Length: 70
Image (tube, rainbow, N blue to C red; front, side):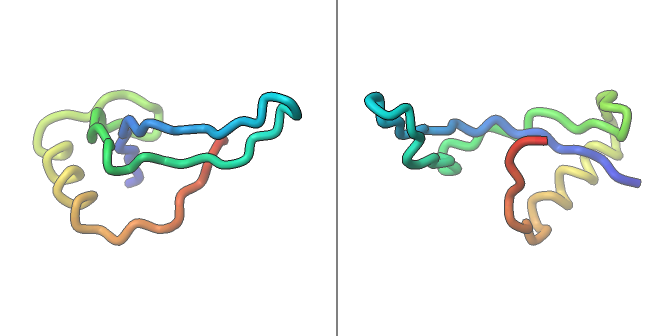
């Protein structure tokens, strides 16, 4: 079973105004908020024991590289 755990993470974008070029994007993971929700494959909220189990697992699991966008 696959579930989704959502977090809120501030992003800082460095923009060169004259050219409109984005120079750098910094994810400020030290200000991470969450987890703010656990959802199933249909993006419906999960609660109870399954949510508790998921939140424990996500804290100890090794995280892969991050993907940006969909």
